[in-house]
Image 1 (cartoon, rainbow, N blue to C red):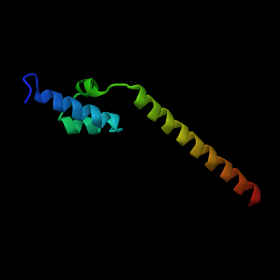
Image 2: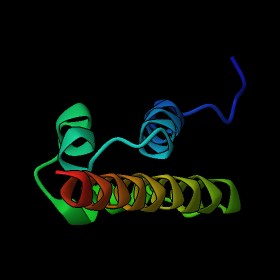
Image 3: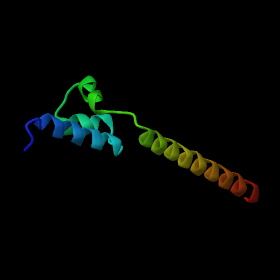
Image 4: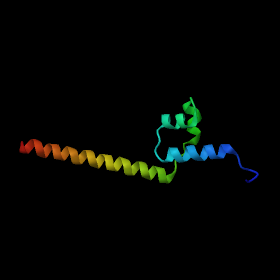
Length: 79
């Protein structure tokens, strides 16, 4: 084991990966045994990769809602 190894590093890495995977704040707090949102925010980093995932998710949601809206309008005209 390296001399500069700290168990905190495992905790930080695990929580950072969980946050990047999309875990909600409350989930992360429970996982880490924290009662404070402020403490959990230490593990949440904004990366370019994560920002792209957010944009893709927003884009998919908007496209889905638009598609549903257009389908509803077609159904209303036909019915």
